[in-house]
Image (cartoon, rainbow, N blue to C red; front, side, top):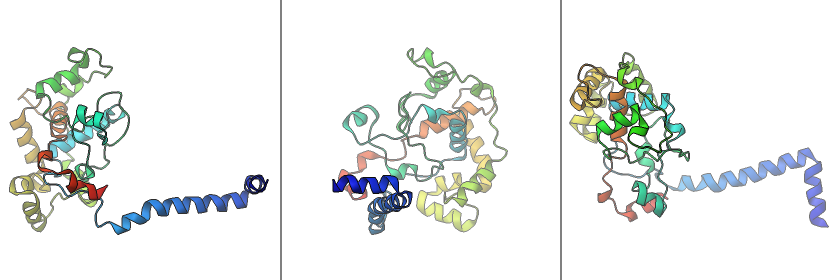
Length: 248
C-alpha cells in the first residue's frame, strides 16, 4: 500500500516527478563521470598512431560524404567472435585524431577498422566500381564516378588548419614542426606540415597510384589511400593485454 501511495505521488505531481528525475539523472551521471577524475588518462598510450596524411584525410572526407559509415562501423568489440573475424578490438587511441570518429554499431557491411592492407589497391578499386563483381552477395551501391572524378584539394590547407584547432597536430610553425619530428619522426612530420600539404598529397598519390591510373589524381586515389591505412598504425604484436587493462 505504501509503495502504491509513493508511486501515485510521483505520477500525479509533475513537480515531484521532475525533482525525482533530476536526482536520478544526477546520481547516474556522478557514477559514470566521477571515476574519470581519478584516472590520469582515458586513452591508451600506444606507439604508431599518427594523424592522417593529406591524401588519406581527403579520402576520409569522401568516405563520410558518400555515407559509407551508414553501413560500415569502425569499432571491433572485445568479444571473441569479433576478434576472430576482424582482429584485435579497437582502441580509443586509434581514433584520437578522428573528427568525427567512425565508431558505431551499424553493420550492413563488415567492420572496416582493420581493412587496411587486407586487400590490394586493385581489389578496392574494383569493389568500389562494381561491388558484386568481387562479392556476389553484396548489397553495396556502385561508386564508378570516384574513378573519373578529379580530387579537389584546393582547400586542403584550410581543412588542416581547422583540424589543428581541434588539437590534431598539423604544424603551422617551425616549433610545431620540430615537435612533430620528436613525436612522429622526420618523415611523418613532413607529411603533417600544412605549408607542404598539397605537395605531399600529390607525391603520395603519384607514388601509391592507388587507382591504377597515372594520368591524374582521382577521388578513388584518396578513398583507397584512406581504406588502406585503417588499422595499420598499431603493431598489436608488441602490445601485451596487461598494458591496456588499466584503461578499461
